[in-house]
Length: 314
Ligand code: NDP
Image (cartoon, rainbow, N blue to C red; front, side, top):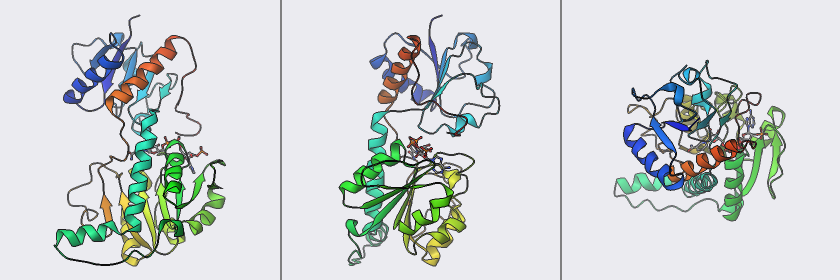
């Protein structure tokens, strides 16, 4: 059967860009826009999706592989009717980790130099001279989620001179990074971390984790960088911790829901920098190349990389 890839990642304008990206890396691959009324669902063999409508993937009888348009597939597995027998491949583009590392390095340096205070002063044309309290080698960054993203961020932070510790479900061996494991070692991990970086997947275990009980165990005056998923954070608790001085500053990329509401108090908070879920989005060309490569592997009957694991939940 001829392969046909349906795309649901952005609207019709984005689809035109997807077409250009796939034309460059996989000329000849037939592409269709999700929801095209002229499309026969029985012809769809592959789907590249970010947030398909619940039940829609289950109605594609010839579907062989589902590709998540991002590293996190939480918006796909939220579908109760998701056909679980069909492999779900998470986006595993090499450049994604580099971009995330750059974002985390930028955010950590921004917290170190109180970039938010500088931005507020500049907006008011005010010469607000102050000296940073610490340099990078005097600070330890604690990374929650030492996976593909977290490991690259760790290496780049080390390059800037930061000390780095990590927290994950299972033990990790990253040079120079002390590994803390599971709930039992969370408090010890927090006690080490001057800046917390959240790079966890959205699962039942991580839902609502960044909330008052955890923040109370953080080092007084810790910084916070949230770039995993919005469901992991309880924003009112974070704002309260900032107001109380328990947190000194936050850089937040992910929210629930997105986009962040225009009337949210987060926007104007003097200690929060907001970014619009842009920490690490590889180009369409990079992602198209990855999808085309995995489709070729599937055609050859080879094992697929980066599969969603229902037992782990991510
Ligand atoms: P990986 O699967 O490579 O790594 C996930 C890490 O999280 C692993 O170290 C894993 O530990 C750890 N982890 C998972 N569950 C728990 C838990 N309950 N307790 C402690 N540690 C846990 O994912 P990536 O690094 O590729 O991506 C991580 C997340 O970053 C994505 O799921 C997505 O939500 C987010 N992301 C955000 C982007 C943005 O632009 N803001 C862009 C890309 C990703 P173990 O290996 O031991 O299971």
